[in-house]
Length: 227
Ligand SMILES: Nc1ncnc2c1ncn2[C@@H]1O[C@H](COP(=O)(O)OP(=O)(O)OP(=O)(O)O)[C@@H](O)[C@H]1O
Image 1 (tube, protein in one colour):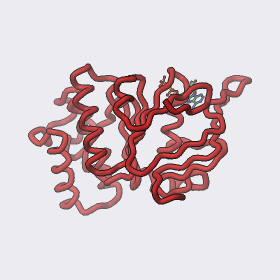
Image 2 (image 1 turned 120 degrees about the horizontal axis):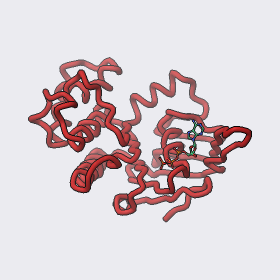
Image 3 (image 1 turned 135 degrees about the vertical axis):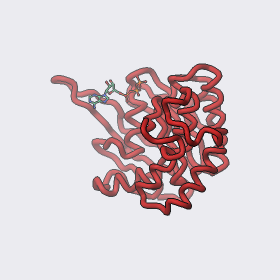
């Protein structure tokens, strides 16, 4: 794998069974993401955007092809290696925040670090810094139920960054927010990714959001087309 790339994919195919038929979702896709770049992926509903993201995030597997991401060969990885890769190399943000309701905002941010067995004191310092970077310093002790949708998504963004990932994978991260909160979360996502020089893959329906990324692709009929 070329050290200047975060992701290198060759000839990746993914199908799903559908009754007696087979759905061809990704059709011999080749793709390279240079280190530190920000890529947006658009495409119609059902075109396979989440499937593409989930394979790079080691949440799903391709049928065939070579998938190298952050130095890991995902097409050859076993379950333990997939989980190690997910926890150490990637930070995921979904449309819904998936914060744990019985944990405070600060505890939610710390959680991925706890799973890796990091030193709790150091982790807390990092989590407080991240809380500040998403402008939520005064809300660390609040529970998710006490936060607005936009605030919860900012906590989810901080949580995605706690393990200093090499790659952020965002699946419609502003899809359930209003215009004002969408812009706020978008601004934070792009600026935090670029400050930390982390590569970003962002799946979105929103063309204006996509246009903020320096690389844009459109997924159609199983093929990735640069825009
Ligand atoms: N586990 C599965 N089993 C069978 N079919 C699936 C599975 N997961 C996804 N699909 C199908 O694969 C296609 C691509 O799904 P995917 O979620 O990747 O699309 P998407 O572009 O992200 O859509 P949306 O924009 O609506 O979220 C869809 O037709 C979907 O129904």
